[in-house]
Image (cartoon, rainbow, N blue to C red):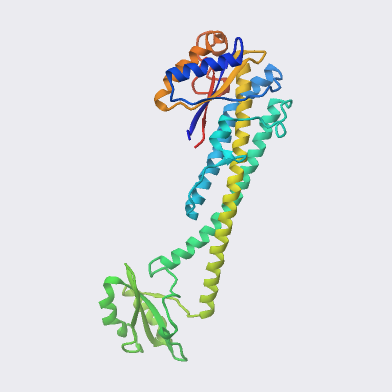
Length: 374
């Protein structure tokens, strides 16, 4: 599937079918690697020249907005598929692949009546897509909030001993708690363990001799227990800090452990449900946005063709997907087919390009704008 298409229109002097035949023939002879398709633009309501000119000022900006929302949803889909371990499938619009929808575009009269003013059609498309974008922001924020909570828990579970949750490292038999005795947990720098073992009994009075035990070690620290009289615990903590040992506050509670476990399981389930729901919503919304965008493109090519070639509407609209190496050749073919009949419309009196119709960065003697699907 191509990811970059041109939507163009050429002026028609005799008939659209003969112009289409000439375009196909020229492309097949001189740029056979360029797919070309008819772009079916309906007979829309022209309105006044002033309304067309006013609309043309907004066309490029509106296209950038619609394209941007389409890309945002596509990126969200790719991220969700990666997180789910799902192999990304081809995105569809109304049940057909995206490229097929574009190259075989059919106007939806029920959704966008052709007798509606062009401005009304464009505004309704903009409102629809803006609402979808707002919905996506809310849904993505809810999903990211759950992910943030899980990431915070994972950091506690997988961080260094200085910060991680210790509850799954400490067993009931490691802790002594009585009327007079207390067990503290010391986080000792990995390369200071000898210092700890030789000094912990003398950091304060009333430390139980040989009471330390190593429970765990990571890349930076080791976790030790030490048992002492509870009335000297504060003195011990102060002396330990001065020697570079960190005493972690910890209270063993099976109930709290079970509660944390259940909270984690619920968050994981919530994340999976939300991810699945958001992914399905994105699939449907991407199709809706892409369909709206292609209807906008039909309005755009119609409006720009009237401004370029005049009335009554007489033009051929087409979709091309030239490879990068063939772009200059295809531009040359299109320029030849457009002829000089419309030169007054695309060049001003002082021969400066009208890079103003639709806001294209570069003007051609025919209507042309680029659609980036990805």
